Image (cartoon, rainbow, N blue to C red; front, side, top):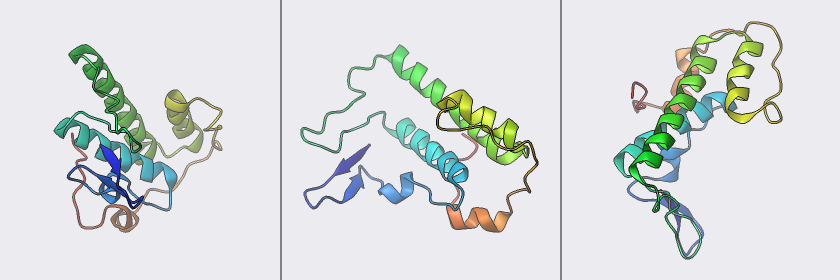
Length: 136
């Protein structure tokens, strides 16, 4: 998916790294949109090319079953991310969804309090005018 050119700039096949990584002030929102972009790119072409020589495709040996399992688990991860960011307003409950995917070492328990909803204006900072492939 992402390659590195001779000038040490990150590039990707038919897609810039900025289209894969989604910047936001909140890491959880950024990760959610980045996961969606990764899923979209993998649906287009299922490959993951190492950015270092010899540019191996990490998915080259995946058979259809392993590919399906990978994509299914990515979809489950995205669903948990959407739930944690878009639906779950309690920090503790949202952190438990992240822990399900990363463990509690990297995502400690959040406070047992409710967050305010994400405003549409803060989302536009992350996605701009482009429509993310949210419903897939």
